Length: 200
Length: 173
Figure 1 (tube, each protein chain N blue to C red):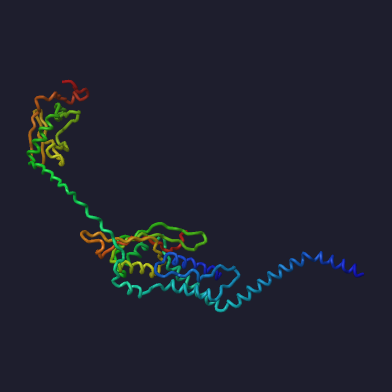
Figure 2: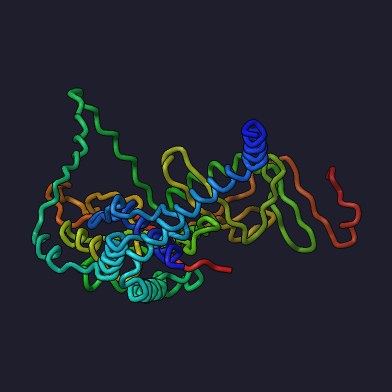
């Protein structure tokens, strides 16, 4: 029985001696590899008990005092500052600034080219863009313009009528008449919805 | 007559030869047992008291083991060390549980700690981990200057200590 107890203690001692940074328990002091019917020598038992005492009383206030204002012995390599090239890179020209109304005018000019026709269904008007996309009142479109390539604008379709549509950007509005070159238009009544007229 | 006696003696010796070998082995075994018993008697002085003392120590150690299932209490244990060590525990996270071998009475639980403080305080925190009741063994650690804009790393007073420790724990069923 006593051997089992001593071995339990040995497990805890080995835990510390393998990992502890501050106090290492000397494993060589332990001579537990004996026959089961053999009583450990008195010296061995005293060693085990003294180690148990050390394990249970590990606080050492002197160590904290030793720390004081101990400086950090480790040096850290500072990241080298990036080397500036000798060649002067010309600063990019600042992009022109436009008012909302000017931006809206440019968007309207771009959009008008894409309009291929208009459509009315049950009193609701739609504008068809090249590619088949239909716009209706209340739609919001993300748009970029070539002169401000880094910035995207969200425009609102304020209203659509047979004669044109009104675009909005923020508080600005612009009326975009239906281009005379628009290639078609259609009016669908509720009765026609089952068989829409695809070729006006 | 003498020849007869000689033949008789040889016969007896032949018949008893195996018994003699057995008795010699037994005698050697008994001699060893007597030596062990003599040694045990010599070493028995104070044995009972020392066994009781050791049992008490082990019982005390048992009370200092972590419970792997008490995760909130376990992590709070590390946060409570902040004040004594004058550091800031940025993170204390319970990690893997290792049951240990079948013959071992103990398991272990891993914890990942991130602690911020000056160098001496961080060493004090490490010492605190060593000296608290729980059995805590540092496993891996790294130290780097705490991120502060415009402060040279070698002159920074605050450091971040990343630390992985294993804590001796009870075995869960």
